[in-house]
Amino acid sequence: MVSAAALMLGVSHAATVGFNFQVNWTDAGAAAYTGKPATATAFGIPTNGWENLAPLPTGYNSTNTGPFFTNQVINTTTSTGGLNPLPQGSVSLTWSCTAANSSGFAGYGIPYGGPSPNPGEEEVYYGFLRDEANTYSSPVGGPIPYNVSVSGLRSLFPSNPYVIEIISSTDTGNVITNTFITSLTTTQSVTYNVSRPGIGIMGGLSTLTAPMTNDSISIFGAPAVSHNTGFAIASTIAGFIVTDKPVVSMSPQPALIGAGDNVTMRAIAVGVPPLSLQWRKGGVPIPAATNLTYTASNALTPASFDLVVTNAYGSTTSKVAAITVDSVVISRGPNYTPDSKPLGTPHDGLVLGATIVASSTDANGTNRLGVAQFAATNSDQIIVSGATTDFDSTTGTIMMWVRSAATIGTAPATLFDRLTGAGGLSIVQLQSGNIEVASPGGAFDTGGTLLDGNWHQVAVTFSTTDGSVQCYFDGHPDTSATFAAWTWPVGLEIDLGLTQNTAAYSAYDGQMDDVRFYNRILTSNEVASVFTSGSLIDTSALKLQLNFPSGKNPGLTATWLLGTDILQSAPNVTGPYADVPSAASPYRFEPLGKQQYFRYRHTKSTITTNPTDM
Image (cartoon, rainbow, N blue to C red; front, side, top):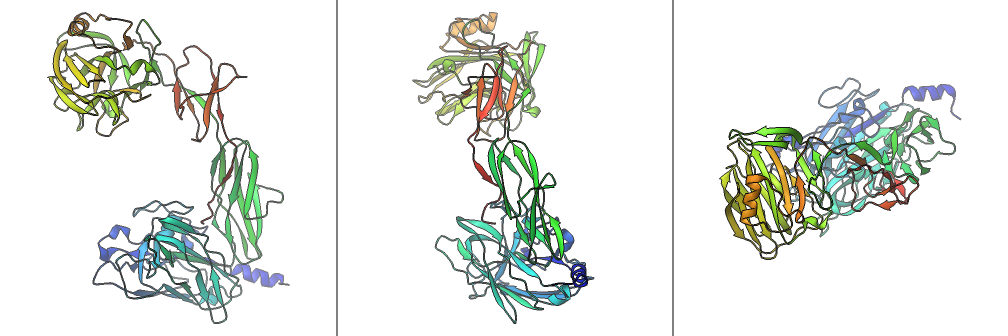
C-alpha cells in the first residue's frame, strides 16, 4: 500500500512530456517543408509540454546523403529552438536515422498533403525519422534504422514509474512494424493497429509500454521491408510521449448521425496504471460507462460526451465530442421568377443572386420592362430545372434579349448553358463582344457585338439529328454551322448568367430579358417578327418564357447534412410520404400555394467516431 505522503510526493513530481521529431528540407531546396513545431495542444499535451527537437535532413541533396544524427539536452531552463522547460530534471537525447522526411498524415485515417499541417496533431505527425526501406532515391547507405537514446529519465520522474507511447507516420508505407524500447533491465515491444494497403500516407499511435523506472532507454524499430507496390512495411517514428499521469492522446471525435443511430465513441488514454475511466454526457457521469469505448444507442437528440481519466498521479479530461443528430430544416428563399408562357406546365426560374429591375433603356431609346440584372462579381445566376421533357426536343429555338456591360472578364461569359461532353448547347459572350455557340461537336462565333451597351436580340435554332445550328442577331440571320449529331443531357438544368458545368466560362455581367425556348425551329420571318413586335409565335411550341416581372414567387429550401438520407414529401403531415426524386441538400422548391410536409428517410446504422488504424 502506498502511504498518503508518498502519494503526495509522487503527484508533486508528476510529469508529461512529448518529443516531436522534425525534418529539414532546406538543403533539398524546399524550405517551406522544414520544421513544424507543435503550435497547439496535440495528443492531449499543451504546447509547453512539447519538445520540438532539432530537424534532421532529408538526404535529397547529393552532397549530404546521411545517415544523420544529433543530440540535445533539455532541462528546467531550456526555452529556445523549439524546446520548453521541463517540470524538473534534465534529459539528454541522441537520435539517428537514414534520413528524415515529412508525411501528409492528419490522424484519424485522414491524409491532407502539402507543407501546411493544421496546428496540433498534424504538426507532430508531419516530421518523422525514416528507415532504409522508405527513402525513395535518397540515402542508400545500407540498413540503418532509426535509433533514439534517452537518459536522465529518473530526474524527470524521481519517485514515479513512467510509460511511453510512440507516434508513427510515413508517406510510403502500408504497415508499420513493431517498435522496441530497451533498457539495462528489460526489452519491450509495442505495436500499431495500422494497415493501409495502397495508400502510402499513414500513421498512428502505438500500444502502451508497461511501467518503467529506468534512467536510460533506447527506442528503435523492427527492420523495415521494401515492397513491390512501392508502399513499404515501415519502421518510422514521428514522436513519443513519456508520462506518469493520465493523458488522453486520442479524444473521442464529433459525429453526425441520423435519428435513431447507435454511435460508438473511442478514446486512447495513457498513464501509469491502473487508470480509472468515466464517460460523461453533458458533464454528468454515465453509469457503468468505464471503458475506452462507449456506445450511445438509439440517439435521438444532440449531446456532448467526454472521458475523464484518473490515476494515482492526476486526472485529465478528453476533448468534448459533440454528437449532432441530422434533421430536415425548411427555410424561406430564394425566390422564383415566373414562366409567363400562356400554355403548358410552367417552369419557373430559380433566382440565385440576380435582381429584377423594372425597366432598362439603352442609348438607342429601346426600353424593356422587367429585366434580370446579373453582376458577374456576385456570380448571379438563374436556373430552370431540367427535370422535364419540354427541353429535350430534337429541334428548337433558344431566344433572348441581352444588354451587356462594356467589358468582360478573362473568360467567355455565360448567357445560356445546357451542355456537357455528351450533348447540349451553350451560348456565351466572348471578350470581343461576339456570341459563341458551342456543342460537343464544335463551336462558332457570330458577327454581331454586344459591347455597345444597347439591347440586342440573340436567337439560335438547332437540330440535334443533323447537328445544324443557325444564329440570328437582331432579327437577321448571322453565322451558321453543322456539328455532329447530339442529344440533350438527360435532366440537365438550364443555366442563365453562370454555369456550374465548366470552369472555362465566367459569370455574365449585364441584363437579360424575354428568354424563350421553343421546341421547333422558327423561320427567319418568325425570328424577325419577334424582334420587331415581340409577338409570341406559336404558343403551343413555346415551352419557356421568362419575362422577369417585378413580382416573384416565394421559394423554400430544405437542408439536411447526411448525404445518404433520402428526402421525402407529402401533402399532409400524416402522409403518405414519397421520395423526392434526385433531391440533394440544399433542395430548393417553389410551393406555388400548395402546402407540403418534409421528412427524410434514414437507414439506421452504427457510427464509429474513430477508425481502428489509430
